Length: 107
Ligand code: FES
Image (tube, rainbow, N blue to C red; front, side):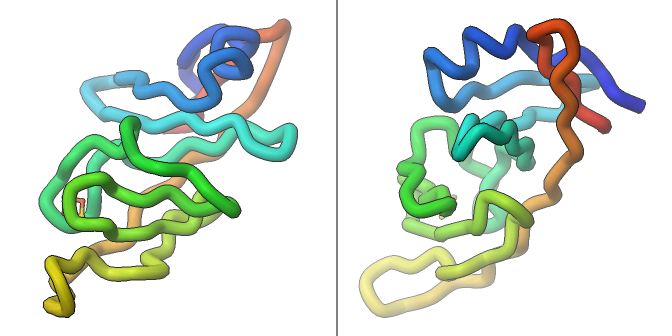
């Protein structure tokens, strides 16, 4: 079921935003004319990704540098400290829909 997340214009201005829907933290990213929705909980130790770096359709966690594909939440680089890599799970992603300038997420 699609649930209201936020105003589309606000996401365009802010580019990425954390929203909470039914107690689930979701990271919205506006990229290449599309709104992507992923778990805002890193697959390593659960840090929020909202302060992470978005680059070339990826988002990097600030904590231990895990890198995820924005489109499907797949892990591209595991969390690491120096050369030591740590287990990192992929992120769930969610369908989005824009209606009347409002963003809805299927949760
Ligand atoms: S919590 Fe995100 S990489 Fe460790």
